[in-house]
Length: 336
Image (cartoon, rainbow, N blue to C red; front, top):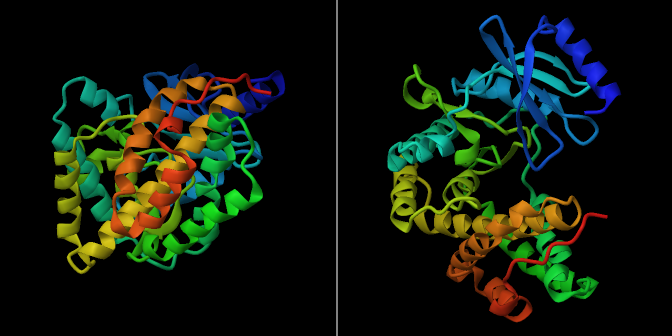
C-alpha cells in the first residue's frame, strides 16, 4: 500500500473507531483486494482494502445486506467508505472449509452444508431485487472468450484471428439458451471451499459463512453448484459430486432433470474455459504464475463437461482447435 492510500486507510479506521487497533495481513487474492485483521482489546474485525476504480466495496455491502436479510451468514458490514474503497466487516475467523478439510473434517458433511446453503438461497431469494447485474448472453460470451484471447495464443505462439474468435463464440451463443434454461436466482460466482467458512455456535445453514460475493449476479441456479463441485483448485470425487447433485435436485423436483443436467454441463464448460483463460492471464499479464499448476485439473473438468450430448458441436471445435497435445500448462512469461 502506498503512502497516500495508507493515510486514507488510517483516516477511515480512525473514523470507524478502530484507529488504535493492531493490523495484520489476512489475505490477498487474484483481484486488487487485500484483507487485514484488526484487533482491538480482544475484539476483532476484517478490513477490506478494495481500491477503486478496479474494485467496488458498495457491491459487496449490497449483496451482504441481501444475504443477511434472508438469514444466511454473510459478514456484517461495520463501516464503509465507498469512495476510498474501504469496508470494515465482521470477522468470521480462519476456519475455511479448505482448512477444515485439511484438519480432517468430514468431507461429505461439509459439502452437504454447502449444498444445503445453496438450496436455502434459491428457496428464499426473491426475483425483483433492483440493480442486480444479470448473467446474460454478453457476459457469458465475454467470459468464454478469455480462453481464445489468452490461453490459445499462449500455447500456439500466435494471436487468435478474428474469424477464429467469431466461430468459437458462435458455438457458445448457441449454448446460451441451454445455460439459462433453469430458474434464476442470486449467483455468488466463486462458491467453493476456499470462500466458505465453518461458523461454530450457529445452527443449520447459518453455520456456513459466505465470502467473496461482490461479483454476484442474477443467473441460473446451476452455476454455483458447478463452482462448488467442479473446483479449479481441488479434486472432488465423482461419487461425492453425484450425491450432491442428487441432494440439490431432490429439493427442486419441478426442474426437469435433463434440462438441469444440460445447463450444468454447459455452464461447467463455460466456467472452466474462462478459468483456463484467467489463470493464463494472471501469469502472463499480472506476473502471478502460481495459478498455472491448476490448469491440468481444469482441463479434465472441461473435457468431462464436453461429454454431454448438447455440447457436441463445441466438443468438435475443441478437438480441432485445441487438440490434446495443446492442452497443457503455458510457459511462464514476465508481466509487461
